[in-house]
Image 1: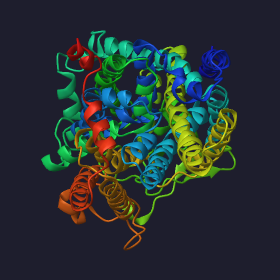
Image 2: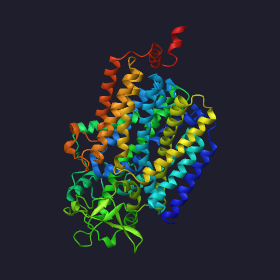
Image 3: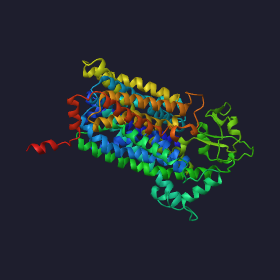
Image 4: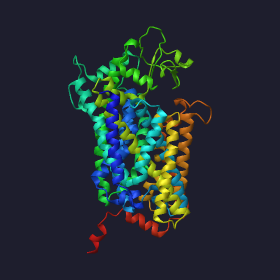
Length: 592
């Protein structure tokens, strides 16, 4: 059977499963809708957290980034997994004990202020919309290649699907669909990795295969270093980032993870505080399976890609190359007129606009602008296709190629659903119920949440169809925003009794404003000139992806200084903070 037929079958089966679960787990109350009734087991919650967390960025883009940047890409692995350690130890148990539905709810009550709650809602919306834009784009990329539809139509299909299971079941529907999606995405990620590892190194375990040797006895990584230097790239295993920038990006991703509203809310869905800690540990284990495999997939895909396209006659390229060319995500332009693909270091094309060939009815060669004419490189490869194209490049069976498409969709849709729920609860619970209309009935609140989801999906779909120019790094930037705004307010709220509303509000506003300014100036160039500013102008040599660390430190300093210069929080709030940190059951032990 063809790849397309297999894709329709596997995507159809997995989607039928998701819809079935959404209908079975319909939400009857706001508690069901917001926190799945608070009765999810740690095992199911660990799987759901892992699926919620491993987005299109983890599944589709991360191995792609590593395969192009080599050693430098390891910051994503360290930062995104390290954040879970922080979550499990510092945040999850305490937030669970506080017992609020959402992050703005915690901030509003801990800082006894609706202004603080509103600032937190705005931050949650900024983080979630920045993040969800990347997910919808991921859905569009997968649909456009495997179902052979336009990218925008792919985004629209994705919007309709997420709407059904988020609208019907809220957190309850999303939790159980995410358990299914975790199983699909991990199976889809690992199966091709086993196949390719066996094919290239004779070792079925990809993590070991990556350090193994290939035909001729050469180590795989040595071979990739050699191929890289022959083509004029820096050695794959050699890093170019400064130690400070590696540290800054890793820390920003770690504290960003620990401050992400759609991940934190998962710890309210378990019955007890102990279960929150357990599910964070299990989530880390489930995530590690994919994260330790990603560098291996990056190495396999990079080696296969170079060996397949280097000095190949364009007329003889394999079918997978033409398929991806039609989606506009690979482009070749014959600069020296020899009919061969010349893949070396340097820009092949500038701008992402493929030229539409009227005669063939497909996308083909892209325009070269003056900036790329000096470079001899003739091949443009979009990083986001490395994981999806990998099984095709390695000539794996068609059902494996289709399975990866189903896995990519599961990853993007599960995270999009979690983010849309955060957006809707922020609006319906934290803005409308808590501030505008406190006497609202439970049924009214449920309807408000559903209408908010509908609005959020329309906005997310718009961003997916018209992505900001920096969509590849958009996820890392969402983490920077979470690190700069939420993390200090939550951590100081738990561990600093003297922290008051004035400090928290000032810190969040300064932190997120600083991060937004830096992101816009150095990623889009909209402030201070029209080109994104070069790396030589970065503050303290910190990349936009790592700037969340600096913005977070500024937030902490502002919060602490302002809180010490203004009145202490009321006595009952200080008692709550004292009480949060006493382990459940410790109080009874003393009373006997």
